[in-house]
Length: 465
Image 1 (tube, rainbow, N blue to C red):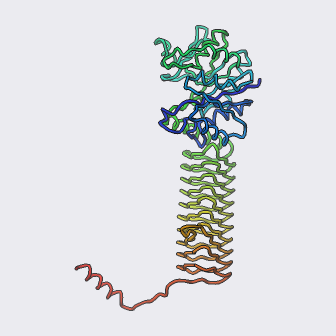
Image 2: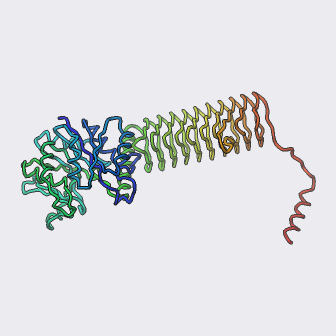
């Protein structure tokens, strides 16, 4: 295959998105819309990719491209909204290859194999090849018009259709092209804004090339689901649904069990033999290792879930790591910079923040552990609180190996509990507890015989006044 460059058209506004965010930066399955066609072109082997945007979105688009791609992706600016033909002309200024792909930035379901089919047509003598599809209701789409031999002679935009016969055509233009660069430059120099929009249409170039080169413009039928373009938020939702299904199938074919209803971002990595239950959301740069099990309703963002780890239902894990054979949940909240080591347990309604539970440590019920380090095999009782914030600064709590922290304990940081120490239930710990010591700090209990009867009578009398 000859060398080729790619121009990605991303200069449209967000009017139909009803958003201040440029349409191409709206996220679908964890990535901006424009990411997917750019990646497809790079995977196919494009030497240079040029993303054409408008002056308002230029800086934001450049920043996002820098985050998304190690490869150098160029940008060009269409100064005035003069249509897709003018935007393509702007992009071509950075193109040196003899062939060029022209793609739209709002087509996240575009497949590399479809682009390969287009470039193959150029190898077989075409000057231009583009994807088309058959729709039951083609309203709103540009129609592919063919002559009596079946050769493409034009693409006519919906609002410019000239008669009922053209309007009845069900083959529509999907908006991705492989073109001989010289032929495209020539066609773009001739197109005129003679249409309802008063714009320079890229699709007018199809008619010009077809007129100059018999059978030189070819339309290849493809799957509408893979050629879907996003124009508004309803279509964004539809595209994301299809993309989530595609991502789930990709993981399933690699040996992951993905139950119906899981939502997995394109950025997520999952090893074979992991199991992802229904209603799970895996976001960002999450990594899930082999044999991990993520149960119903968990939301995991930018986190590492190690081999054999279990997340029980409805846990939230963000920016943290869950170690091998660890068990978390249900209803646990693992906040950023937490480390749950091998075989550690975090139970229901336990919250951690910037805390490490070392191997085999347990906090099974109703606790807040912030800015802490919990030693191997230590036990944190129900209702325990690491009091880590004084209103101005965060302070650390350190629990030694094998220590036992009784229920309803408050540890006022900075404080340390030594290895093997025991903190009695209900204690407020304000000083370090030495190794193997017992700390107890509760008020002395007094029992007053018969007083409950007198108290009850006094309260009842008061309630009747």
